[in-house]
Length: 172
Image (cartoon, rainbow, N blue to C red; front, side):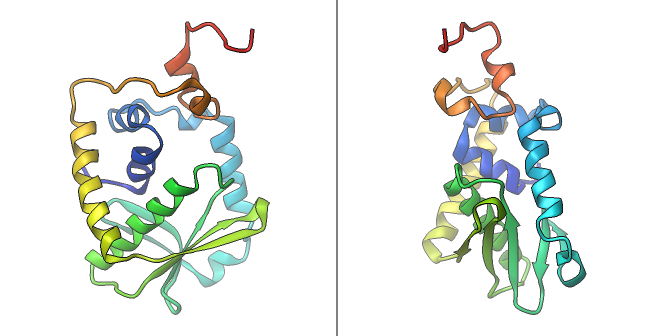
């Protein structure tokens, strides 16, 4: 199985979500939050597709790549999972480099927050990514689904109902 940016992102958010996604249990298509993120992605920079190109390579799909400036643009809805966003983009830079496209940098854009963050790939990052790929492979090929993480971390997850159905609400 090819590791995607989504796998990498989920590793840093929740191993259970990673395992469920990798084993064909996909709740993203029914999530209002995911749909909202998709709308932000599609409407925030309407003229961008005129200048930048989509790249699909080694299982990753980069929506906006500026080939002249060698910059990957990644659009996110909010900065709540910022570390996972940064590592997902670093993984994209790693895959591009592995395929001979060197000197690429990244920018994470949060249109609703009017915020951007530059992302660079360093040697320690490359080592962390290599180790993380091994960890992702171990998790997704495990026979056992990892345990749930704390409920407060799960509230905005598309798998929330799947993981917590049948549980009494903390809100009562």
